[in-house]
Length: 183
Image (cartoon, rainbow, N blue to C red; front, side, top):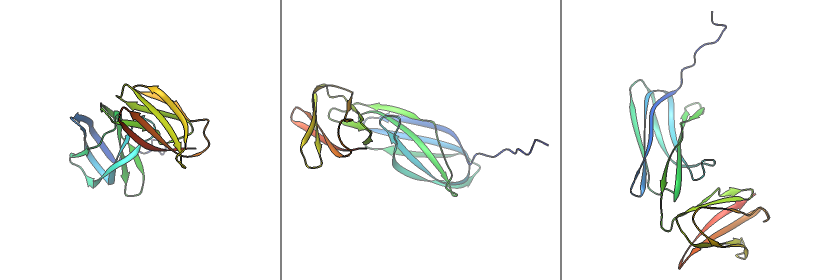
């Protein structure tokens, strides 16, 4: 007798997970050796390796004892490092995560701001060498400015009250505005 312990089979045995950068897209490939009660896979992406967003789903095979290959294309990767993981969900709602894979993209005007919900620290990932940041409140008033910024930066909005803000990144004649929630 083994003390009442029994081996529990993993619902999905993943044997491969890789991410390949091809021009302006990320191609995620993964394979399973077997699947038991596998409902679906959720593809998740992060710009900071901490907070992940769902960018797509793929139906699982349910039950299978043969190798199955899957592929997902991220057609709009973030500027900077893209962290990817796969969340596998069973029919009963239980889930598990794959290992994390990453690729980096350079973008002339692409700017990545993470996290989008924060208590105060915001990471700016970009290849822009010269830009300014204006933070606007919901009424459109400028409440904070960061002049003479360049490349990847971390800024603080800890002094601002909780609410919705708009981060406007200006570089030359171009600008991009992104929404952020301060907790």
